[in-house]
Image (cartoon, rainbow, N blue to C red; front, side, top):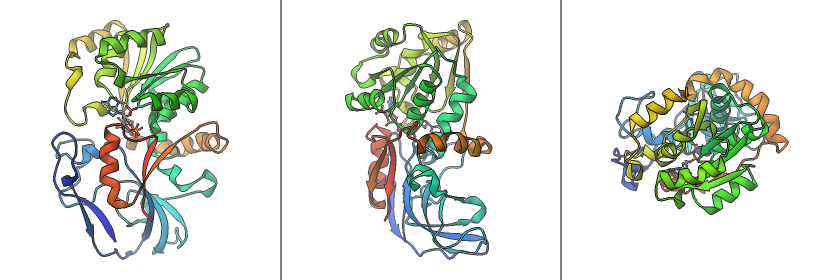
Length: 338
Ligand code: NDP
């Protein structure tokens, strides 16, 4: 089997030398374990954090260890009564062609929930993140205004579509004209601004103010940086900010948002009575069945749309991952393994 290991830790943006492509023996399923031939794996922004040796909510990948990833595939041998060869399953198998996990760490895929790739995106961890973050911390109400960046990604597009269905004005922010067109045409955003078209937060804020004539009630935080700096002064009293991610800072550089200061943020939180809630989705999987129950049928009926960007071959995963961190993906980034 093939796998991709962490060869070295990046400083700033990852580079190809941080990854090594290796051939190793296929594991043998022990008692209670299931061996899966992987068909698709997910690439997600959180993996950048796993490459660092810093204290975080999850342990880093060890040097020489297989890069972490959720993946879906077909069971080829099973030492558990819960899985049979031919079943399809999701698990945290890693960047690899095969994976072996205890049965109780696997999720059997229901073919009625659509193509197996949806378990990595719209009906998997990212879609669930959007649903949970919006409903639990965003508390959307009809007539309000929501802003979310990375608007065409699996988290942002879920947030935008659910907010629209709840009767909110939805304002997306995305990188480039093509993504902005996708945000409005496919995901129903009322308007989408291209963050790349603005040199600084002040110019972005001017257009955001026009796009949000009644101010901003919910800022679903995916990116931080320039977008956060533009948004914060436009928040309405009692606004909510679910803090989901801050991808513009994952490489450490602050660049154009160097004027973003803690006093400015704290003053706005204070005088606008803002609710700012960080969350890590892996702590909330008790709600995943409810998410699937609600959103699964919406996806099946086309009421929730999604797009997937599928790279071909495990060997191309590092390039697709590095591109995604800079906005090179068009929709949920997946790697096809067979
Ligand atoms: P996406 O598929 O949307 O990919 C990331 C996107 O981030 C890029 O496509 C790009 O979109 C955008 N981006 C990258 N750099 C910048 C920048 N400097 N400024 C603005 N936008 C930038 O990712 P996901 O939907 O999977 O994840 C979205 C966010 O949610 C991430 O921050 C992720 O870490 C977070 N997350 C958090 C979870 C949690 O448990 N808290 C769980 C899952 C995800 P564009 O080209 O449009 O700018």
